[in-house]
Amino acid sequence: MSDVYVLGVDMIKFGRFPDRTVPDLGAEAALLALDDAGLNIGNMEAFYCGNLGQANAMVGQRILQEIGQTGIPVVNCSNACATGATAFREAWTSIKAGLYDVVLAVGVEQMGTGLLGGSGGGAGIPKEGLLGSGTMPAVFAEAGMEHARQYGTTFEQFAKISVKNHHHSTMNPKARYQIETPLDEVMNAEMISYPNTKLMCSVNVDGAAAAVLVSERKAKELGMQRAVRIKASVMTSDPYQERDLVMPDVNSCTRKAAAEAYEMAGLDSSDVDLVELHDCFATAEMLHYENLGLCEDGEAGRLIDEGEVELGGRIPVNVSGGLLSKGHPLGATGIANIYEVCTHLRGEAGERQVENAKIGMTHVIGLGSACGIHILEKV
Amino acid sequence: MSLPVVEYLKLPEGGEPYLEGHKCSECGSIFLGERNVCSNCFARDSMQSIKLNNTGKLYSYSIVFRSFPGIEVPYISAIVDLDGGGTVKGNLIDCEPDPDKISFDMPVEVIFDDALGRKDKDGNSYISYFFKPIS
Image (cartoon, rainbow over all chains, first blue to last red; front, side, top):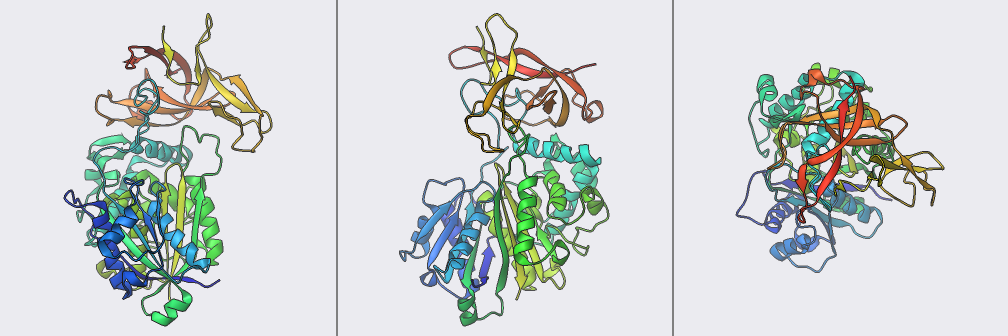
């Protein structure tokens, strides 16, 4: 089977666009990625579209109505916060299978405001605040406190992750925010769900990102100069864990996906030059340092304390600003992360460039759970 | 008459309320809510209804300061491993919402009480469960 390459990839600057539509945002990202690849919609043989908020509303076809209705197969997919990565991986799979040589993947989302999640559904009475909390800040706080229980991780260590990612985003013009947030500001921000303050929660924004994937044959034909090789594409669901029913598990699915991705790529974590991982909350990022094998179990707190995960450190994590400051438009996130890593591998990341980046990893988690990991390589 | 807040809270006539688990007789996994197939070992028709214990230990928690409109805060959202098996999530009450006053593995008991006065659209009241520190 031939390798698959990213030939074009881009994202719109994340923000709030109440006067625009989901297909409109997706179409903008698709055109950017097509331009980046030097192709047009007429060259695409299939299209995988990721969106959550309008999962039943044929978003992919509506994007084509805005940029060119060529009659190609369109698959709309939704997989919680792993939606974008799922669309990207379906495109990869279709090329791997030999069905197509040139495929478009788009992730797009328009977000509401306020807390996500909640346990208010079902018959009877609302359960939120009665049987604990199902809000996302609380669920990921509980996952972080499990780490605190095991290793004594502190509120301050979790908060430092947010300081780091906000700092990184000051160098990313496509991030929602470019604002430094010192440690005392993060720790003294409104407490949402201990230990996650408001500045330790990802930002609800609108956004879109897109990629053009091609077969090796097509990459050679079109020119490899800016192509990025996909060394691994893995998805997992959550294997059985005893506390599953009350404590959604983001760890075991990530560990399983990471192990499979390293094996598929023939690499290990020491080969990776940068990581974009799913920092939906500061507490979540802490867990994934260990889940992705960036350090030994129990070492995550030290990693953030010693600056190893900062730009310039041993293994920079979320140099884009991450979901905490770049923003988290759910369906777009999985492709926006791939855009970020590809930009570094191409040496085009400007001020935030990870020097000599050869191998990068992206990771997303959709709670429920779906984990998507990609390992990308400079050609 | 009050209704149970969730299907796995049982209110036997003339008996004490309890939480019900479903235990796989093949692998011992315990689930909340009825099911036919074990999602751990895939055994079919191996589920047996069991009465879960009313004591346990705090596994993890968060102190919730912002929730949905109308939900009183702060409260402690607690995940409790019950003695003898089964993990349940609920509010930890009679405990200050302060991380210095909460310790992992602190022993708690499960108590049953009115569901904070919440009623459904037909005016029915509900019985819920809560965790309370055992001093």
